[in-house]
Length: 492
Ligand code: AMP
Ligand code: MG
Image 1 (cartoon, helix red, strand yellow):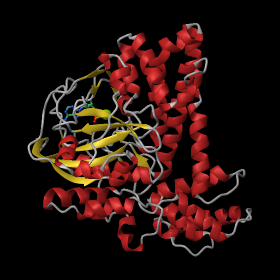
Image 2 (image 1 turned 120 degrees about the vertical axis):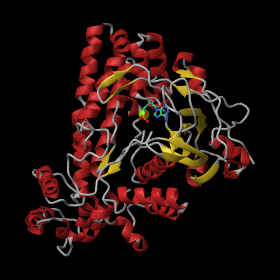
Image 3 (image 1 turned 60 degrees about the vertical axis):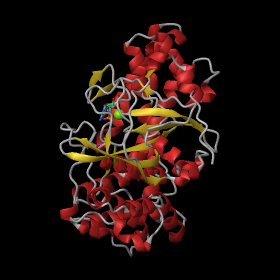
Image 4 (image 1 turned 180 degrees about the vertical axis):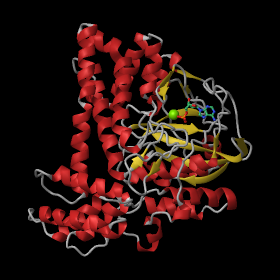
């Protein structure tokens, strides 16, 4: 058996003020509930070792291999619009980085691992339910082809955490391209730490955008690259009905991965104003606000980078103008990605005038008729020849009929045959998403009855979201009225 070979480039390459050593803390009776063996293999990890007592001690945050010294990363962030100059890993530690089988460096972080200098009044721990939610939803996002942090393991601590009630404790190992956030740059900017900013930007470039390392204005290139990655990411969320829930600047990764699954959710019935998070009273992070809020978050990144953008551009004014232009490009990039995606979702092979209106009309009808987002698009593939049942997803089925006849006229202006079109639509419109009521049922079965069956079935179904899985049909269905989950909780 082989213990993992961690690297520690973050601690080695960056100033010590960007991290702290966590306080010693351990859990009494760790139990490995789930190990993501596919991901472990991708990371070059020895599954036998991970399942051994030493492996479990590491995944529980109790004891690490000899050369491993975990760190808690410092960051700041705007939370619901209010700037907090110091947040940081209050209940997480970066164990180290691993070179994966494709040659990429990936962070392995434990979440729920105990208190650090950044814990403020928190206990540094996490409850089982939210950790299961992160596991399920992050892996579902990955299977949908959406950039995301991953989940390597779920460990029950054998201890309780105290929130509104007493809950079982757990931790996960989270795997990320890196954990550098918009808020990591803000942490340095608010301290006027220009050397730190430059070091962090160079580190982030080397890790995520290495082609920029040698270009003349690399920090502007970096800002542009993050804007492009975020525009694409948010478009992908909007195309599957995903709501992040807490798009604070500390929850925006500069790698372009989705990070920090708290009160997130996939919509069932489509409505652009949908909000799930119990703490989002104003609807700041409502579904349709996500592109706008992301521009706002990226503007905070641009602001943080201004000192190094200015010196690179030969003047603060010049740096400012360039930063503004970079942020201004978000909208066009977002629309390009979203428009291409939505055309594919309604089965269009070519670009023709009126296509986007046609798509917008469908979304509008869906919103007014409480149509299920996922099933409407999925079942549209059967409507190519007019034999489907999509109309049944609409409160007023005739609203769909009139749209569908215009849609079929549009399809007739393309030469593709129905079979090809249907097949292609199925590769972009998933059948299975992490529906809230299923996530909640899996958590309840585990916490109330120690039954992991529903959790494991859900993970298995969601690993193949585009495949027909006839024996798993019920997982595709929206909730019955009494199963509907209206709010999701941060559960920190
Ligand atoms: P989040 O809502 O998970 O993005 O966390 C926001 C901030 O609160 C981060 O700095 C976290 O590390 C910190 N935090 C959240 N929960 C806890 C906890 N139970 N103990 C200590 N810090 C926490
Ligand atoms: Mg966070």
